[in-house]
Image (cartoon, rainbow, N blue to C red; front, side):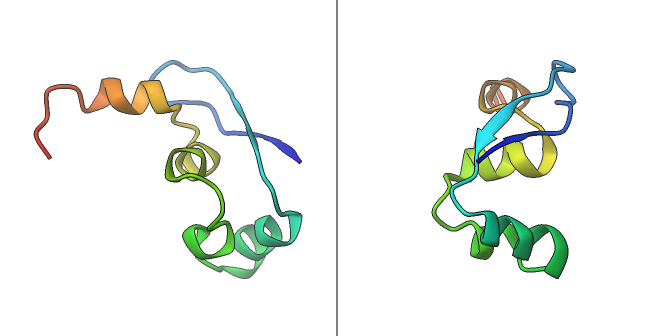
Length: 68
């Protein structure tokens, strides 16, 4: 199912991500299961966007030039 994500703090736009498991989404959103556990089959970038709204390109821009 497609979910609209929160507004991105960098660009101010909403986004959408495909959530492969409505049960996993429910477990994360309503039962307090960590997102990486409840939605383990989603990419880290998609989970971040679902949780915070930050698009992958905006995330990269936020940390451009920062060494890991």
